[in-house]
Structure formats: C-alpha cells, structure tokens
Image (cartoon, rainbow, N blue to C red):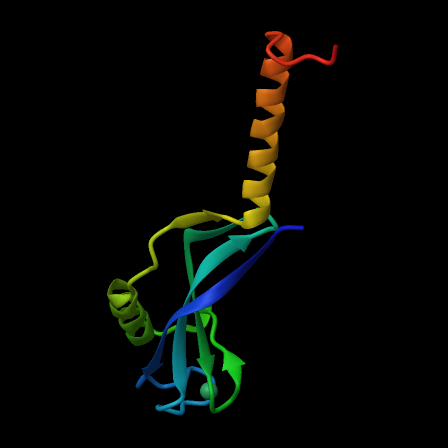
Length: 119
Ligand SMILES: [Zn+2]
C-alpha cells in the first residue's frame, strides 16, 4: 500500500561525447530525489540518484561506461544540485485516525474515572 517514486530535480545537457555512439551533444544527466508515499503520509527523503541517457543512441549510460571527463562533469553537476529539504506530511486520513484515537482515549478516561457512566 506504500509506494516510492523519484521526481526530477535537475536535468543537464552535457557536451561530452557519448561512450556508445560518440555523439557530442546528446548526453543528458538527470538527478532524481526519492519520495515515499502511502495512504497516511507523504515524505521527501534525502535519497538522490543520477541517471545518464544518450538521446542519440537512446542508451542509458551506466557509471561503468563513464570516462574521466564525464565523471568530472557529473561531480560538478552533483555539487550544483539543490535537493529539496526532507519533509514529512500526514494526510487527512492519518489525522482522522489520530483524532479518532484521541476521542477513544478521552472516552475511556471519562468512563474509567466515573465522570461518564451508563446508569
Ligand atoms: Zn549515444
């Protein structure tokens, strides 16, 4: 019932040569940040991943294929990325549960202390 997905933080076009097709204007680096969500809450995590794609040969370029030049550029881009601050938000359903629990607790206390009774 929970899910996590990544949303795009930043996309950068690189002028490096593609290690696969050697095109020099088709590499794109994408930074994504992780978001976890279920019916009770939505949270932005500090988890960031990067992905490189060549739009000329339509290949995903994995770090193992990166040249020193590409690594340098990725490092540089990484430093320039501004991640969204971590956040945690409860959804209305969670608040409804909390409110219900509180009411239940208050009810139990009122009965237990004899303030309210069914006589
Ligand atoms: Zn390519």
